[in-house]
Image (cartoon, rainbow, N blue to C red):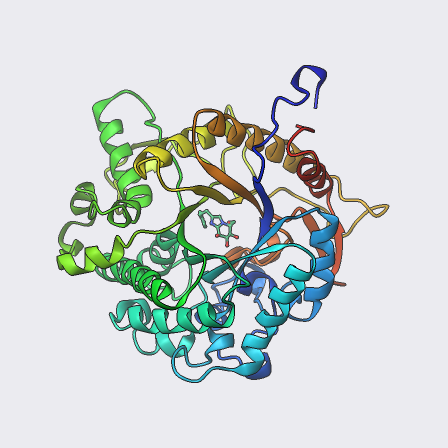
Length: 453
Ligand SMILES: OC[C@@H]1[C@@H](O)[C@H](O)[C@@H](O)c2[nH]c(CCc3ccccc3)c[n+]21
């Protein structure tokens, strides 16, 4: 904070401050106590898929250290904690039998959070599909909508009155673009034909879960989307056309059907013969009204026309004038403000939003020095993105909360443990946690409702 900005960035009363994680990235013990394998157990144990051969077998050992991690959340002044449930821990085959020890883990976690006055925000699905369901076609099998709603019902009933805010699916785009189009993520397929079908079934599953929630659940339910705003590399018409294709393929592919608009026109151009039409009843199910929407936001892109780039015929141009994180993402806080204003408009200005993920990967040492981890770049990223968020609220965007990605350094999917996003450092040799300078700042932001910014 500087004297002239004192109090300029105060957040609204009731604004919810938290941090986010995902089951496979932090829990470890993924096959313990009767759990079934997930596609990430398979994918991470398949040679060649993971940087340095890393897997989620241990991760942050959160399955055993969850009590210690709740104490960590208290020290960070967190008001909320966004976590995901491992479907195959709860239902080892993905359908049918429930694993009591699996669901007990989340039961203890939720009660532990509530005892500490931390609100649990539960994501049903954060990429770790039960392997047994993948054997039945996974997201390519239309039956998955019912399998997913049945799984959701187990949790809606178990946690009724304790978990009040539910997320159905984390990032349909990454599930499909990573898992079925480019194959960089589990289950590692590469087909535009499969991508269209998987994407549609992910949306149908979301709708089926919302419908089931209305029958058996209590509280509020929504979906979590990653949106990366696209700015044209030049004012040439071919670059604007490329921008529109990139925007359709990432930002509108799932948002438009959820908003009752069906798939964006440009998707036909992007996927060509792989593009599919689907029955109207599917789109009615998909566009079930929800209570909130999560935005996962990290960076923007500046696409140019690139006829050889599959499938969008667009390629992002690196903006060398800006800083870039360890994952190669441009740092551009005003683009977060733009995205929130855009999403507010796209959702008709009626749907409460929450920033469900925002954060940055920078080089941190493998262990603390004098009990500290100085992470000035992450401190700067956090400060400037919270200011950008505040600017969006000032423009009338209804944002209810912010969940920092991530509570802990964790398994960054196929990049393994090489990329650290945590506001808390994890020494993966000893599992020692050390709150980084960014975490100390965040604790102060929460305590002062942003006053310290
Ligand atoms: O990459 C950082 C985080 C992941 O660790 C989370 O599990 C995931 O929800 C998440 N989504 C995004 C933005 C979308 C994206 C994901 C992967 C690669 C590129 C963009 C960034 N992140």
